[in-house]
Length: 105
Image 1 (cartoon, rainbow, N blue to C red):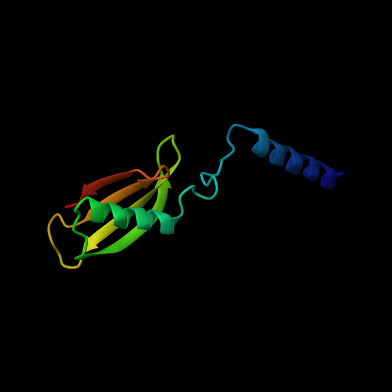
Image 2 (image 1 turned 180 degrees about the vertical axis):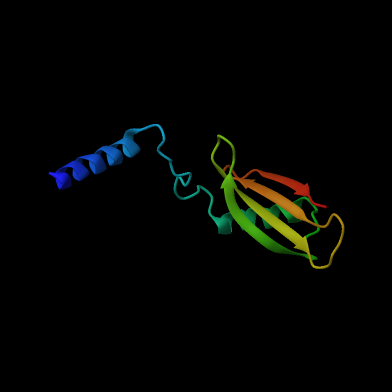
């Protein structure tokens, strides 16, 4: 009898977690529409065509991040080879292949 009671409690808790409002939904919605190699190509082409001097920089990071309610974006960071004030370059590459650039400290 005790085993049956524990099974019922376990099943009830499991169903509550699956159907209840406290269920945590994963933020990973699958493969991005734009792959990292494509994002890096777009970033390099953008830098070349918009006279962004990145030859004295290296890519420090390229990571997939959220873009508010619209999905995902690639965030690419270049750091200068030497400690130069204002030398960081940040690019946001959106899934529609548009680019936003900002500079760091």
